[in-house]
Amino acid sequence: MDILAVIKNLLSTPKHIVITVHARPDADALGAALGLAAFLRQQKHTVSVISPTPYPNFLSWLPGTDGVIVYDQARPGPVLRSIQQADIIFCVDFSLLQRLHALGEIVDKAQAIKVVIDHHLDKVNFTDLVLCSSHAAAAAELVYELIKALVDENTRLDKEIATCLYTGIMTDTSSFKNPNTTPQTHRITADLMEFGVDVPKIHRLMYDNNTLNRLQFISFAIAERLVVLPQYHTAYFAIRAADTQRFKLVMGDTEGLVNYTLSMRGIILGTLMSEKAEAIRLSLRSIGDFPVDVMARTHFGGGGHKNAAGGSSALSLEATVAKFEGCVSASKEALAKNYKVHGI
Ligand code: 5GP
Ligand code: MN
Image (cartoon, rainbow, N blue to C red; front, side, top):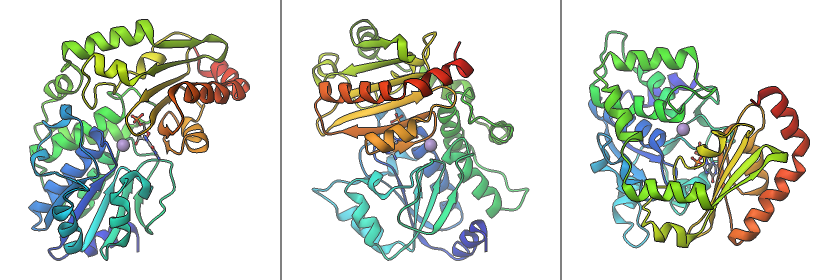
């Protein structure tokens, strides 16, 4: 049986369902999870959405966030209860159990049937039930296709579901400009617009919603913390914890900063290294065929997509920068080749 038929079968009677997302969920993880949750509730299932960590405040406008349970190791009761009762756990926008942090062990031990819905290149390491395609632009695209497979063709989606899914697709494609944007992506978002999605408003909420602090931080980071390695067509930011304190940054305020690297002529590999309490977080981006997921997986315990990946480092910021520069220098030929084909 194909996976859509298996899921359809599982959902043929009312179920207790948990939907989880990866740590520090982005708009695709949260949008796909909330869209799926709203749909499943309409279908008379009992649904909890659980995030392993808090999510950035700039996503709190997404319909349904008020019901999201954030896992708190000091008060695990609500999460443990939902997971114990669950018949099915959907894991949305990730394939590796470790992306759930401490929640991973709880999900792993749960009796529920686990279904992964994902579009990363990472290999699922905890269940055989996978609705995964690395060709999908976003997890929200896969949720859309799942919903379509579960309803008859005349069923209309409501505006909330459409808004959540549209936001996931819009952000994971960087507003339909990344190479993951396909004709099918546009067909899906065109269909979602039929259900009343307010596109200009979503755009403003996601991209024109800065605080003055954040704008001043970006200006500081570009002036003081951006390093360009022209011989490798690479640029990176190294942000200290003291920088984030100085500009009173909140979670999510560094999101998008890495993209400034690729906005520079001649650059096809860009990285943000950011000093957090627990570790150095890395965000990697590339243009063309240079696979940053491989670099993230091989050297920084992470993974992701060919052109957008993340990872972390337990070293100091200085040592992480040195390690990254070492990786870049070892990739000189691949970067030069890729620049020849895809650079401008
Ligand atoms: P970002 O740089 O925006 O945090 O993440 C870029 C992409 O890489 C996203 O698709 C994200 O899900 C993925 N990613 C980020 N951090 C990690 C990580 O630690 N492990 C894996 N496997 N993927 C990650
Ligand atoms: Mn995604």
